[in-house]
Image (cartoon, rainbow, N blue to C red; front, side, top):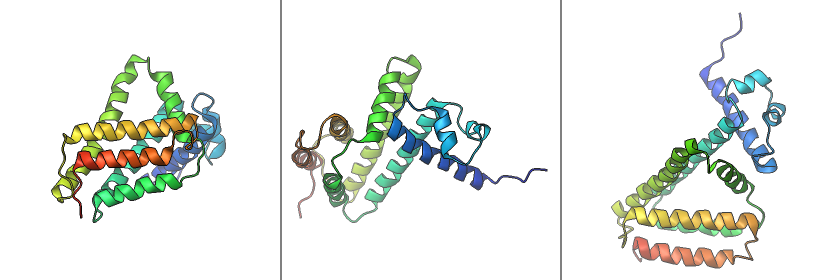
Length: 204
């Protein structure tokens, strides 16, 4: 009789597959990736990997979901700080310090989205991803309002949309050109100035 595999062990296996897959997707891209890549990278049989993920699309969407969960946890951590605004500033300042190299995981996301943009069944999936991100930032900004940090001049959802549009845009740009080419640091500073005004950040 085979030993019973605990739920905790199953989840560890699943996470190990996701972590390996994320690295391979970032290195090879979505289209070039094949399931055998991740089978070779983890200590599981072909059947073992397929018992968790049915195909490449399922695996990549699970990687994106895992990234969403990390993003959500990060938003909660920002909300728990003494100053949400200062924490946002610190995060964007850290972006400036990141080495100027192609953002591979952003690149593979673009590839996946472009491949599937004309697939009718994916329309709801993409819309839900966008709404999820908006909801996260609306919630975060609302925490700032309740703490007395923000006195927004525009609806929080409009500010969240603006925030996401800029953040996505500047990271997509760095897939194709260098930070220097887009004057990355100056763009960040301009954005923060605008967001500060829109949120009505309380001046100390």
